[in-house]
Amino acid sequence: MLNSKKAMTALMITLVVLMMGFNGLAQPVYTIKYVASGPADPLVYVPYTVGYVFKNLVEDRTQGRVKVDLYPAGQLGSQREGIEGVMMGTVEAASVNLAALSGFFPEMDVYGIPWLFPSEEVAARVFDGPFGQALEKEMRDRLGIRIAGGISILGYRHMTNGVRPIRTPADLKGLKMRTMDNPTYIEMFRSLGAVPTPIAIGETYLALQMGTVDGHENPANVIESYKFYEVQKYLTLTGHVLSGQVMVMSEAYLNSMPTDIREAVLDAARDAVVNVRGAAMLLDVMSRTNLAEKGMQVYMPTEAEQALFREKTQGPAVELLKKSMDPKWVDGVLQAVEDAKIEIKKEKEPFL
Image (cartoon, rainbow, N blue to C red):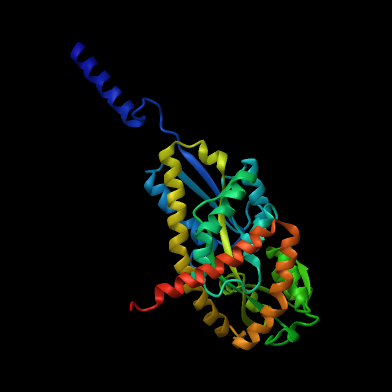
């Protein structure tokens, strides 16, 4: 009987050890509430794709010690509310675009200078390089929130409207254009002779349908995922801003995790962003084709026409930004773009 009791006790101890960590304490499970404003379709809406990939990577790599709950379609509020939630600790991660983030950290607006990035490759070099890292550190130090994994590239933003084709800045004169509530975007449309009208993304479809505004601007995949093609006839591939999306997390929350878990979370976020960047470029091309098939009249401006847009908008935007922040950030991003272009050109030159 005694031996049976010892055997049972040993079995119970073994089971307890298996259910507990090696330090004798139950391994905590960290639950990350990840909020996004767009639809829950990882094959169409890129910001949600990042969250979807991040969830699968981090849950697998931590063997379940980190659990990610996804809340798309604005279930827990707007992008601004998502950022506020991260800062207050009511949510752990929020997917927001750079323009929304600039409402809390104005320096992020430098990435919204019209016609700044000539290619996604240049943008990635700037985002991931010394300038981008310095900008993100400044935000962490000031706000206590971190861009986890880097900046996801959603594709270039383009203009749509239901009145007439847009080929030059003159075609925008007098058009009421929905824009984000962002000084740089508002100044861009004013410089082009349009009437900028800030409206939340969730209210934009109805505003276009009712004629409250004539048009708006967004990446092709967003135009498709929100079905704006149902209420807009003309799409002009202006590519005026390269749209970026980020996952923001609280630095305090990340620091509350054990080192191995924190590193796993940040590594998974980085891998999700890098992988989705390539997917986003493919989705952007596919969405342009889909929008044409759905009845939109798609126009690609010539280089000369693009130059007209750039000349009208870039100077006023740079001047506005220098008044609202330390000019070093504005000059810094412009220099970083030029440096990236030179680096890429050298790398592509044949060996002599």
